[in-house]
Image (cartoon, rainbow over all chains, first blue to last red):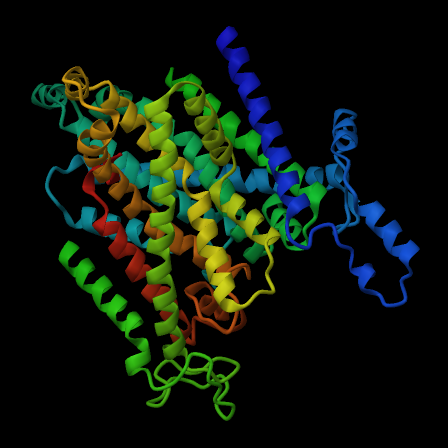
Length: 274
Length: 264
């Protein structure tokens, strides 16, 4: 219980600090907090002072708003941040869920035959070349190609995640299949499917679980260029638009949300491994 | 395969570095009579919308990526060595503070962090400054993961028998660092370097494709690949030439990674 509380406190701390860091970065970035209307030659000193006062940020006041559940207002989208996140989150969550499920399934399924053969085979060469090629291309380029081919954006997310899962699982399973107890099982005539389920898979499960958090982080990172290029109305596209428009309230909230998702995934993985 | 990868990287690097010597034109020269030209003897990869030779731009873009991504990876590894090494060596508060910072950096996906920080830095700067900003940012934001690896290695080495023995023999801290720690941490750092270089190349390309990379008219792979957005790359195959070079370079770099790292 104490350990769980300590982990929860760590998550809260990291999320809070990431929000503060993002706000500080935005506040002190060159050209930040300057309103375009200040450049209007007709604007008087009073108007400019009023515009600057409007742009000023009071961190304690912002924090008080947060504690009341008010996430702020996005000027670039002319909507409240809470409403924007509520609208876009289901799209991204669906994309991430499908992408992660597809990526894990494809990576793992392709890794099993590649790991079982001790000698280099044609399948091994083809699968390694395929995963190597996908890992050599940025997510943004894969997204462009998917738009050209008319393929759904989830395919791109799968193409980003699957090669990593494939490489990692293949190496782990290959080591597992080299174990003496698997040779003994084979000598006793136990079927390959049973060997995989009863011997190989349990021995690599903790390491594979360790990759879960990394794959979530990878998927969230890849979702931004994919959603931006494929014009998917999700949180990734919203984050890109917020970054381009320097929309501070939106960026701070999205950063905290992303940090929360990543640290929670990491904590779940750690708990599962423990 | 590793030999082929080395040969390919070396020839591309030589092509890029000596571009001024053998390319007949500058990457920014506009042939206004030939905008959007198809491949020909004069322009082997055609020209872009402004009439600039694509092959020349690809060669100069290769130079930018192939020279600056290793520099950024080197910077990132130096930061990782300093911070991770300090954390592992000093322990206590320094270790907690450095590792908390690393956790903070790792709590946000790298690409998200990179996009966010790059967007907050000035975009309307000269091409040379934009190159500096992009690659300095890659180096500065990429230290956290290698620092964790370095810290774990230093902690392990610090508790190893040979270090204890050297300490018992009266070796000074400086000697322990110079003779025992640094030589044993260097291969780990080199492995991290080889992991970082292709990652940084891909990250710069993604930034460029999203309009946050190196400013025009200086070419970069990301900037060149943005042309796919406007054109039909499936019928105009030559638009994909930067993608082919990019894939060849990153695949070669991945082949050159230490095998042990691939397994982990």
